[in-house]
Structure formats: C-alpha cells, structure tokens
Length: 184
Image 1 (cartoon, rainbow, N blue to C red):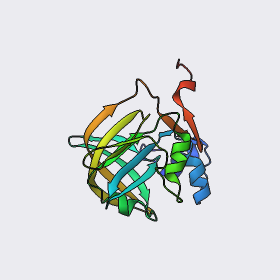
Image 2: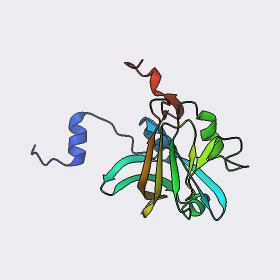
Image 3: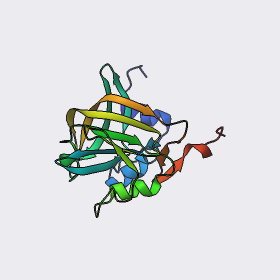
Image 4: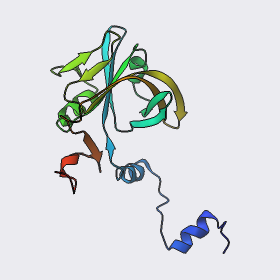
C-alpha cells in the first residue's frame, strides 16, 4: 500500500466501522461528545432587548483583528433582530447559569425577566455571574448549510473567571469544570 491510500482503504485497514447514517439524530448524538462552553449573546436592537444562547461559540478565531465566532440556525427568529444591535455582549455562562440558559433559549415570554444584567451605552448586554464578557460587533456572516457562521469582532473584554467557573455542555447536559478529574 502506498502512502497515498484512499480514505476507504485507510478505514478498512484500521478495522473500523463508521456509521454512514448521517441523520439529524445520529449527528446530534455524535456531536454531543465534544464538550463546549455556552455563550449568551445579547444586545439592544431597535429599542428591544434581544438574546440567544450558543453552544457553538468559538474563541481565538483571529487575534488581529480579534475575532470570535458562533453558528446560528437559519431558522432563528432572534438572530435577524439581534444582529441589528450596535454592540452585542457575549457572556460566557457560569456554572450556576443552567436555568438562565434555558430561559434565554426559550421561544416564549420575556427572556430577560428577573435576570441580573448590565449594559453598555452602545447596547451590549451582559449577564452577571458570567466567567467572561466580550463586547462585540458583527464582522461577517458566512453560509454554512442549515446554519450561518457569524464572525464577531471583539472590542473589549472583562474576565470574571476567578469568581465564576464556566458551564460546559457535554452529551446533551450542562456540566461544570470543578468535577473534572484533577480539579480542586
């Protein structure tokens, strides 16, 4: 066999069996094995508070300019409103934000009712108790199948990680880092 073996040859040689069922259910289950942080994105657009939750949030896309990203479903009713905000606040949710996460993701009622929030003069909204705040603007959007990849430019940061551990979404459940082996 040459070093340029085809993908199918490599798979057969490894003795692996890959599930070729790429249904939504199979993919969600497979993707759930990758732990991710959870971010709330919020801002004031057209005089109203708008917010959504993303477990697809990624930091460090670029350092110059400072860019982060997330993916949003094309069917989102919130993103078309939120992206009109002058500034979008990103709060990396803390380990005690499980209920907050569910509330912000809800399609019913006032998503911000009873939440401890802060906002900037430019309309970025942040949640108290978050591990990190990022003040951002929309840099660009890219089509990505049934989602849109959104790049956001970072204009300011505030680190709260000494007081608040981030929440992690793994295998379809919220978890915290304190219970990870090796942590105190």
